[in-house]
Image (cartoon, rainbow, N blue to C red; front, side):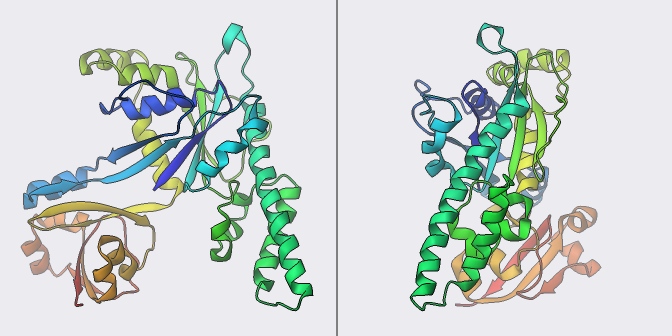
Length: 347
């Protein structure tokens, strides 16, 4: 799972990236370059994994992970020149869109709403260009008697209608997630978290006349969070209390990322390893097995399932079995958040 951190020049996206990276001591090595892409792999700490590890005492404990990409800053003239970034961004699963809401160089007044729609327009135009070229090709094929692309053509025409009206594709979830269109990696179809990057003292959400649809919005004080990430725990505690920070930017961003992608966590346990796995909600058990190992999917027989809450309540797997709350599920079972699963398979 990878999310791209995008934003106009001076939005503070580099600051946000460094705040997230440094929040748990994962400091940058060497000089930070804005002309190179950066990827940070963040550990998703989970108290349920800690509980399972304390119960089973495995040789290894593995948490889920999430990646944040900071594309290279190659812009020379505002948003229009940032189209070169999209090649890196297209491969990501979702977007973290940072908009400036603090005084710029020389005291320039922030225009977060205007900045947001400026970049949104660029993504829409980029998608529209891809759609129009593909439609042209498909229509030419139709004239030559080829019929294979009829469904794709209809879907792309629906995309074109939205994009021509400056409506991002994520506004139509069915269209944005349609399997036929997956290979296009449309920018405006990606789930989006809008980060309003405020001054250190400002905790308020700015008023917008036109808020984005189907996008989550959150306040972040990027410079303050970056400074705290580079402090000792004792120093950080003082600032956290002084600035009324109830939850770190990193934890809020991770939680929002999971909501954006509709992800849940299930767990596998054993003497060798306790591990968390992230999959989309309602993933069939056979597909969840495939995330653990392809052989488990290939030779899937059954899934032994117990909920984390049941295990915590009864205190051991033996007690869970005695209480009759461990279940045998088939390959179509929709995996739930907190499921502890042992996959039975044979290859």
